Length: 159
Image (cartoon, rainbow, N blue to C red; front, side, top):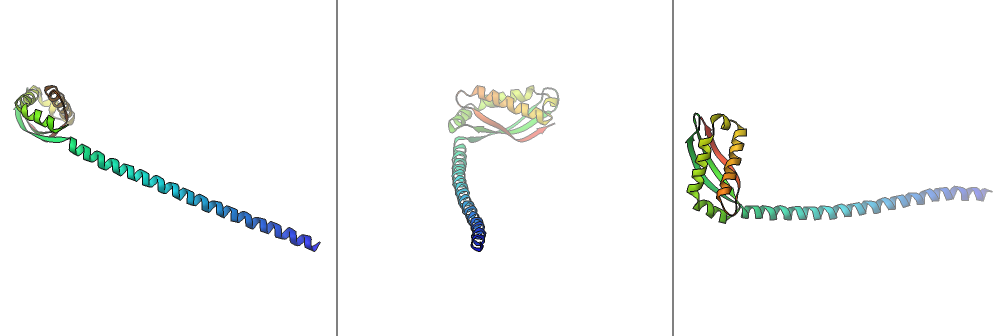
Protein backbone atom coordinates (compact mmCIF):
# COMPACT_ATOMS: atom_id res chain seq x y z
CA UNK A 1 0.00 0.00 0.00
CA UNK A 2 2.82 2.26 0.73
CA UNK A 3 4.12 1.67 -2.77
CA UNK A 4 0.83 2.66 -4.27
CA UNK A 5 0.83 5.95 -2.34
CA UNK A 6 4.34 6.75 -3.57
CA UNK A 7 3.35 6.05 -7.18
CA UNK A 8 0.20 8.13 -6.77
CA UNK A 9 2.21 11.03 -5.33
CA UNK A 10 4.95 10.81 -8.01
CA UNK A 11 2.66 10.73 -11.01
CA UNK A 12 0.75 13.95 -10.26
CA UNK A 13 3.97 15.86 -9.58
CA UNK A 14 5.55 14.40 -12.67
CA UNK A 15 2.42 15.24 -14.67
CA UNK A 16 2.33 18.84 -13.38
CA UNK A 17 6.04 19.25 -14.13
CA UNK A 18 5.69 17.89 -17.67
CA UNK A 19 2.64 20.10 -18.26
CA UNK A 20 4.65 23.11 -17.09
CA UNK A 21 7.49 22.19 -19.47
CA UNK A 22 5.03 21.88 -22.37
CA UNK A 23 3.52 25.29 -21.58
CA UNK A 24 6.97 26.90 -21.39
CA UNK A 25 7.99 25.25 -24.65
CA UNK A 26 4.81 26.46 -26.40
CA UNK A 27 5.36 29.99 -25.02
CA UNK A 28 8.94 30.04 -26.35
CA UNK A 29 7.82 28.80 -29.77
CA UNK A 30 5.03 31.43 -29.92
CA UNK A 31 7.43 34.16 -28.84
CA UNK A 32 9.94 33.19 -31.53
CA UNK A 33 7.17 32.97 -34.14
CA UNK A 34 5.68 36.39 -33.32
CA UNK A 35 9.14 37.97 -33.22
CA UNK A 36 9.95 36.53 -36.64
CA UNK A 37 6.64 37.73 -38.10
CA UNK A 38 7.07 41.19 -36.58
CA UNK A 39 10.59 41.44 -37.99
CA UNK A 40 9.42 40.34 -41.45
CA UNK A 41 6.53 42.82 -41.50
CA UNK A 42 8.65 45.67 -40.18
CA UNK A 43 11.46 45.21 -42.69
CA UNK A 44 9.09 44.85 -45.64
CA UNK A 45 6.94 47.81 -44.61
CA UNK A 46 9.85 50.12 -43.88
CA UNK A 47 11.63 49.06 -47.05
CA UNK A 48 8.58 49.72 -49.21
CA UNK A 49 7.62 53.02 -47.60
CA UNK A 50 11.17 54.38 -47.83
CA UNK A 51 11.36 53.26 -51.48
CA UNK A 52 8.01 54.90 -52.17
CA UNK A 53 8.92 58.03 -50.28
CA UNK A 54 12.24 58.40 -52.06
CA UNK A 55 10.84 57.46 -55.44
CA UNK A 56 7.76 59.65 -55.27
CA UNK A 57 9.61 62.64 -53.84
CA UNK A 58 12.24 62.33 -56.56
CA UNK A 59 9.55 62.00 -59.20
CA UNK A 60 7.56 64.96 -57.88
CA UNK A 61 10.70 67.07 -57.57
CA UNK A 62 11.67 66.21 -61.14
CA UNK A 63 8.25 66.54 -62.72
CA UNK A 64 7.06 69.81 -61.18
CA UNK A 65 8.70 73.12 -62.03
CA UNK A 66 8.16 76.48 -60.33
CA UNK A 67 7.88 79.64 -62.36
CA UNK A 68 7.99 83.13 -60.90
CA UNK A 69 5.17 85.08 -62.52
CA UNK A 70 6.24 88.41 -61.07
CA UNK A 71 4.33 91.20 -59.41
CA UNK A 72 0.91 92.58 -60.31
CA UNK A 73 -0.42 95.97 -59.22
CA UNK A 74 -3.78 97.28 -60.39
CA UNK A 75 -6.91 99.08 -59.27
CA UNK A 76 -9.91 97.12 -58.06
CA UNK A 77 -13.27 97.67 -59.74
CA UNK A 78 -14.83 99.68 -56.91
CA UNK A 79 -12.16 101.19 -54.64
CA UNK A 80 -8.56 100.68 -53.69
CA UNK A 81 -5.93 98.57 -55.33
CA UNK A 82 -4.43 95.11 -55.15
CA UNK A 83 -0.77 94.22 -55.34
CA UNK A 84 0.36 90.61 -55.41
CA UNK A 85 3.20 88.38 -56.49
CA UNK A 86 2.58 84.96 -57.99
CA UNK A 87 4.51 81.74 -58.43
CA UNK A 88 3.16 78.89 -60.57
CA UNK A 89 3.75 75.20 -59.94
CA UNK A 90 3.95 73.70 -63.43
CA UNK A 91 3.69 70.07 -64.51
CA UNK A 92 6.86 70.05 -66.61
CA UNK A 93 9.53 72.10 -68.33
CA UNK A 94 7.45 71.99 -71.52
CA UNK A 95 4.65 73.81 -69.69
CA UNK A 96 7.22 76.32 -68.45
CA UNK A 97 8.20 77.01 -72.06
CA UNK A 98 4.53 77.56 -72.94
CA UNK A 99 4.11 79.94 -70.01
CA UNK A 100 7.20 81.87 -71.10
CA UNK A 101 5.95 82.08 -74.69
CA UNK A 102 2.47 83.22 -73.62
CA UNK A 103 3.65 85.53 -70.85
CA UNK A 104 1.96 88.66 -72.25
CA UNK A 105 -1.38 86.90 -72.70
CA UNK A 106 -1.17 85.39 -69.21
CA UNK A 107 -0.30 88.72 -67.57
CA UNK A 108 -3.16 90.42 -69.44
CA UNK A 109 -5.61 87.75 -68.24
CA UNK A 110 -4.45 88.12 -64.64
CA UNK A 111 -4.80 91.90 -64.80
CA UNK A 112 -8.32 91.51 -66.22
CA UNK A 113 -9.27 89.16 -63.40
CA UNK A 114 -7.81 91.48 -60.75
CA UNK A 115 -9.52 94.59 -62.19
CA UNK A 116 -12.88 92.81 -62.12
CA UNK A 117 -12.66 92.15 -58.38
CA UNK A 118 -14.14 94.35 -55.69
CA UNK A 119 -12.48 95.22 -52.41
CA UNK A 120 -15.02 93.15 -50.45
CA UNK A 121 -14.47 90.08 -52.64
CA UNK A 122 -10.70 89.92 -51.99
CA UNK A 123 -10.32 91.32 -48.50
CA UNK A 124 -10.52 87.98 -46.68
CA UNK A 125 -8.95 84.54 -47.06
CA UNK A 126 -12.03 83.01 -48.73
CA UNK A 127 -11.92 85.68 -51.40
CA UNK A 128 -8.23 85.06 -51.97
CA UNK A 129 -8.83 81.32 -52.36
CA UNK A 130 -11.54 82.06 -54.92
CA UNK A 131 -9.12 84.38 -56.71
CA UNK A 132 -6.44 81.68 -56.71
CA UNK A 133 -8.86 79.14 -58.23
CA UNK A 134 -10.07 81.61 -60.84
CA UNK A 135 -6.53 82.52 -61.89
CA UNK A 136 -5.54 78.86 -62.10
CA UNK A 137 -8.53 77.79 -64.19
CA UNK A 138 -8.25 80.82 -66.47
CA UNK A 139 -4.54 80.24 -67.12
CA UNK A 140 -5.10 76.55 -67.77
CA UNK A 141 -7.58 77.55 -70.49
CA UNK A 142 -4.86 79.64 -72.15
CA UNK A 143 -2.33 76.81 -72.08
CA UNK A 144 -3.02 74.17 -74.69
CA UNK A 145 -1.18 71.13 -73.42
CA UNK A 146 -0.07 70.64 -69.86
CA UNK A 147 -1.32 72.73 -67.03
CA UNK A 148 -0.57 74.77 -63.99
CA UNK A 149 -0.79 72.49 -60.98
CA UNK A 150 -1.03 75.30 -58.42
CA UNK A 151 -0.87 79.07 -58.07
CA UNK A 152 0.89 80.48 -55.00
CA UNK A 153 0.66 84.02 -53.67
CA UNK A 154 4.07 85.09 -52.39
CA UNK A 155 2.90 88.55 -51.33
CA UNK A 156 -0.51 90.23 -51.18
CA UNK A 157 -1.55 93.79 -50.43
CA UNK A 158 -5.18 94.89 -50.68
CA UNK A 159 -5.88 98.52 -49.86
